[in-house]
Length: 543
Image (tube, rainbow, N blue to C red; front, side, top):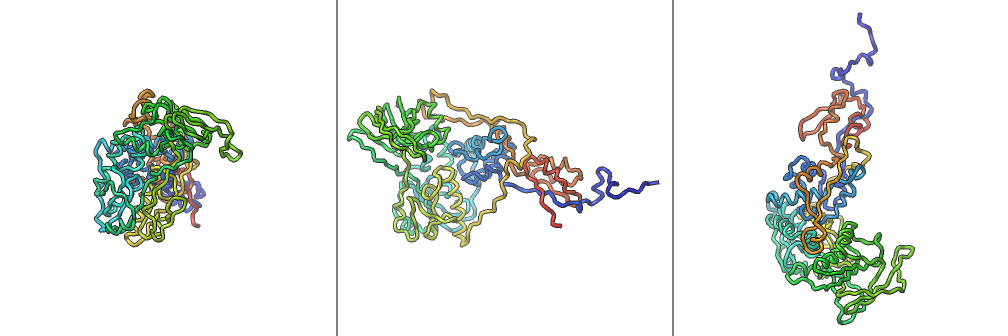
């Protein structure tokens, strides 16, 4: 005789496939793509996690192609980007952030070595766009506009492309063969760069060339000055001119004892350059302390390693033929430097001012509707100025001035220019919720120390312009890419498929993801608890 039992306790293990149990739920699991914090942090808008996924699979070309959808300069950015993405990386809360920048460096160098080219551009749109300036922002915009099918001409006042990438970043940080290779790819798309063409009036240039739109991307090449009493024989130079002259045959004559006035990355670059030119003493004079110094810590450390001296809390009061007078400063309660009345004399063959740069805005004087505030051009959310069809980015607009930001501006402007030329408005995709550390289940990830990039030995660093920081080899790059936690996005680990007690997960095969069979899912949440990357969440049922 079969014993009669309540229905609820007659279910045997594995029997849920014979019984629809989905009605028991008050919440259900759903797959989603959360926004990785690295992606969210990147000023260039790279889909970092996506190209890392291809990289850790060993498909370097696909990784590179995914990367250049957003940024045409991976080999450059793998060297000069300040990689704020790594500061946001969730892996940093486990051991150390993923070396995103080092993997980007590797992919960029692979592309150059293998001769990978950008894909063919879209069908010609019949529209012409003028880009003023061949720096990172202008070249980025030209690249994206060309890929969208527009005819792009770049007017560059200088003799070579790159802007501040060439004339502001020393060769020991960015070898020129790398810069030239990545610019050439953009030219190969059909972008025309005209050198030695200084635009004096943007409206005239637009009319004469028959351009439908303009992107202004003039870099900040005018050095800011400071009033320093100096004798006729005192040698006072500006940092921009010094770094620019390094691209010519006649290198600057700075002397044996060089003083650099300023505290930013440019001041660091000039001091390190002076050491490589033979200076026995390169001293940075800065008005505040190290905590207030705008230069990045790693650049300061590298400079100190190379013998650069830094005189904190000091300001230059007078410059003579072979010496300068500095006054010691003290920070007040608000952190502002105040004079102390204590003076010191330093030997100096030359003084280099590194106090920031301004943009030459003469080309936009008298343009109707265009507004300039605090030395930069006012633009709307679409990067268009007050004059229809004229857009601006990079150093010309209010923003942090670095290469990564400039590249992001170029991409954003290109998409908005494209939409404007088509009579519409560009609407970016809505951002997903951020995959914060608490959304991950990190017990699945083993310890994996960050790979350290090789550095040139200190003796050669002091005496040559060879690249200071090397790249990773394939083995190390692969390892570093595999340290990625895939925050917020499924990487098909099969955990959900394996742990579901009701066999309610359907596996579609490599690259095709999973689905839930809600007829059988009880909403227990085990899949959420066991998803390493936080790519599943429970949502309330609409009962």
